[in-house]
Image 1 (cartoon, rainbow, N blue to C red):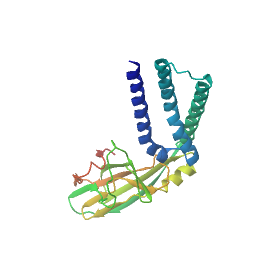
Image 2: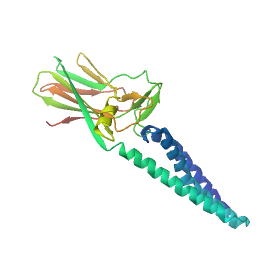
Image 3: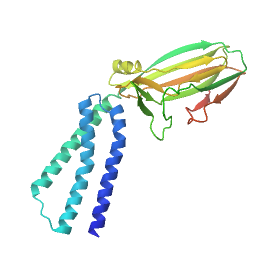
Image 4: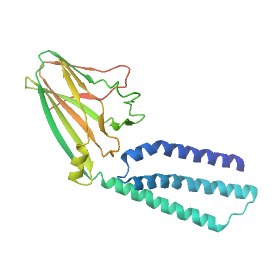
Length: 248
């Protein structure tokens, strides 16, 4: 029975370490600005889970095989655990400060589209191999020298204007207003109007070493009354973004 329990603890420990390994990417992308603090936070997270698991395993091994463990070992292990807990708390606090303020910048463009039907869909991104626009997996991907984030929202409104107006709202957070604006300026996004088709890139792009601070973009598309709006996307890809008719 003891051996079965020990085996279960080992499996639990391995599973926890695997889960942390998968979360490491998110920590690197959205963690503290300082790479040293980020690294210390990751290592500390491993220690917070790993030390209690190892101590439990050691405890049951000691009972099963009557092995003596010096008290200094437990004291040292728990001291390291509390230090690791402090570093995780500190890294989390430093990250939270970077989300304190939010700012946004709005850009507008007008287009004359005489057709009665207007198609709205995703812009081709075949240049980005194996990109997964699926929130279930991850909204983040690093490719070449860029960080790609799937944080694009699209809404459309009926308008009395004869022109199609596309409003882009770039937004981000930072420790203060100045830093939030700096984070906004890292955002690269694009759309293309070709005839009666509006194609939008379903993700934003930032420099590879950027930290994600809630950077994203919201499109508001104002369509002249009387025109039909058709939403289309590549069936080989997951749905790129939700699009809803909004009231003014």
